[in-house]
Image 1 (spheres, helix red, strand yellow):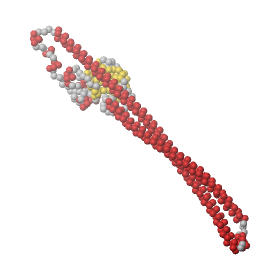
Image 2 (image 1 turned 60 degrees about the horizontal axis):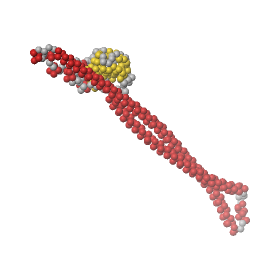
Image 3 (image 1 turned 180 degrees about the horizontal axis):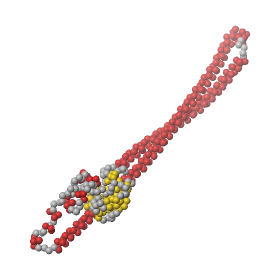
Image 4 (image 1 turned 90 degrees about the vertical axis):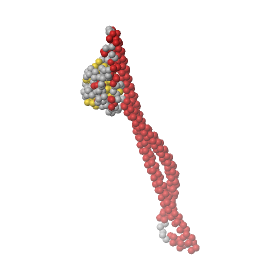
Amino acid sequence: VQKAINQTQEQIRQTRQQQQQVDGALAQTRSQLDAAAAELARIGRQRQQTNQQLLALQQQLDRLQTDIGGAQAQVARLLNAHYRNRQPNAVMLLLQQTDAADKGRYLQYMRYLNRANENVIARLRQQQQQVAEQQQQINRQQQQLAALQQRQKTLLSQLGRQQRQQQQQSQALDRQLDHQNQQLAQLRANEKRLNRLVQQLAAQAAAKRRAEAEARRRTQARAQATRPTTPAAAQTPPAANRNTSNTAAPPATTAGSGLTAEDMALQAPADNQANNPSSGFSRLQGRLPKPVSGQIAGQFGHSRPGGGTWKGLFIATAPASVHSIAAGDVAYAAPLQGYGNTVIIDHGDGYLSIYTGLSGISVGNGSRVSARQTIGRSGRIPSGSEGLYFEIRYRNQAMNPLSWLG
């Protein structure tokens, strides 16, 4: 559970980093949107100025067209006069009938008149060319502004979609972060709940052992008080009445054989076994039966599918009978939040076996169970997987069950 908490905290840290990146990208998109909107406003102002220029050019075009109309009328009159006066020799006749002193002056007048007519025609052509160029210039500016405006609108649309996607991603990360925080709180609550229960059971077991030791001491004291005394007995107490707890050597133990490194660090001290010679759970290492038949789908120390690390074994199986791995006293038999129906058996000397995810319980609190006795039926663990979750603990520390099972 502690490793699951650590993993969930790491996931929360990664999610917060992703959220910061998305927030940064969202802020950048907002800046781009503001810049695009400002550029679109600038293009709008430029288009408005172009429209004003277009209006001025239109007025100028109207004046040019008026001038062109006058020039065209003048040219029309010239053409009409030329059309009506079809006598090619009219000028010659005029000059023949004119005095020699006036002929040069009349010729110069003719030159002036022809030149003026040519200027009118040239100016008309120039004005028509100017009108065409101005019209083309106006059309080009209109097309450029329309293209710029269309590009800015496309950019604004893309940035808007990008902003909506980033906002949705940020909202999804917020929901994921809330879910992970809730999961972390639930894991911590489950851990505290199980540890608190085990500590209470350990305290109750210690109190029970003290009460039993006190009862034995009182029984021995009463027996010694009622036994008849003799001088020999008074001087030399029989071997049966000596305090063997101080003179007898502690029995040999094989608890260390075959244990893993983490189990070696959690072995019961030799003096504890000497004070409790009836407890032999540590001697059963490597010979304990599986609590239920099935396939081991989750091993001690391996990652769990839903996050975290297994602190025991998950045995995948269809609903089947669950058996106690060794004799002991039922310290807890009831539902436990976060674990489902749970049975905890105290095997003495600080050793507990824990069976969770049961669909039914067939033992009661305080009852004595023997090895391989049916204690319930497997069901589903809270994550939804079908099977049994099983732990072995020594002094509230999880041990590797594989080093204990035969």
